[in-house]
Image (cartoon, rainbow, N blue to C red):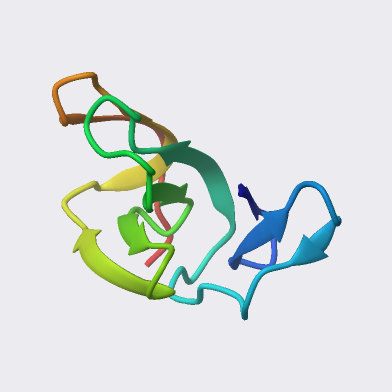
Length: 101
């Protein structure tokens, strides 16, 4: 499974062999998606959790099997430009520009 996110603020899941969308879009971000990261396979296999970062100052954790948001991390005061899963299950994020009210 592949994931994509863009300026429409949605996250989409794709079948890489067929090139077709899997289910509906994952909605929740209010501004465009800047970064995506799958949970590492050493923590859960097959991987079903996906983290998405956005200009809306949030990081969302998605369950891609259930197609729903599990958790919203909204403590950033600036747009989140990158998100990465650590090998021990921690999430690392990076912010760079101020969020708009």
